[in-house]
Length: 357
Image 1 (tube, rainbow, N blue to C red):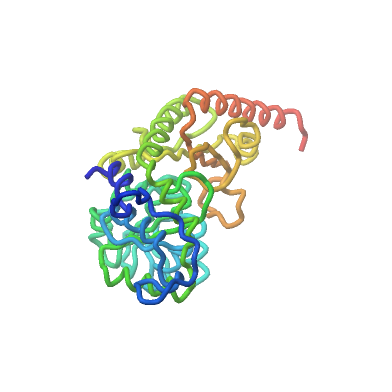
Image 2: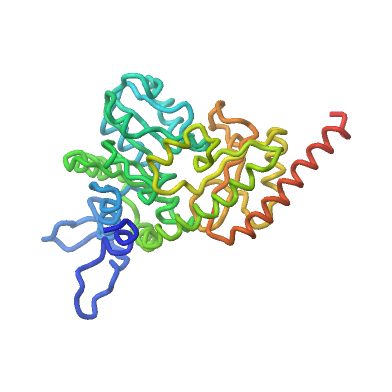
């Protein structure tokens, strides 16, 4: 089945007269003895339902975690690599985890125990060839948060492990924290479940239920946001006061790889303001419809200057603003973004010429 159909149809109870169409939210810690579950730190029905959807979408076996960082931690601790090959820029939480553990980190084209292939990368939107990386040494892990299985399926391209922050596009409503790992190897899946149980990183039933409701519309939400992103990226590329970064544009260095590997371009755009961090901050403060906030992947459009966070990589330009494009009307999004860009540029020019500081 098409992934749009899988997102709607998978993870449902067996149909029966008067039975609910979706797994009901189940608030319980202890369960009566004699069944498979027993205690919900081991496993839970709401988690299983969402895992069934994510596994079917990615083409593997999914294990749900309490957050994206819990999923990343589980992968790293279960696989226990000594060397990790990674892009120069990755999600700041991943970067902090790797640095705190003192692991040897090398470039992606270097032999390593584990290959961490975040693609597109956060927030500089580089796209890496998953199939080519999977042919190199080590276990290949792909952070598929930005692309989601709607845009690319790393396991079918040869990757061993897929990681998601379910908090983002999969749930889609900025109202929960969850993570997931999807693998081809069922033995590895069990090791991840054992790690989850021992570390207590089991998701809550309400979070799993909300994410299950959210994933039903993943395909339509993601494609609508991607269509909006294309409109905005093309218009942004016509401005002379910034550099636009979006893999769907022919000027992007990885455009051909993105076209070959991705079915849909991600709805994230990054812009680098030519006048630097001050102009970037003014842009974020000048929008009315766009919300200045961290995180991404909700139905609402958000933006932020990533270097405002102390943990962001020094390789990220101080003037970079990451735009998470939502599902609002594209013309409304553009009108607000355009006026904010004009205000940011004019204000910065005025200050630089009028303020002796």
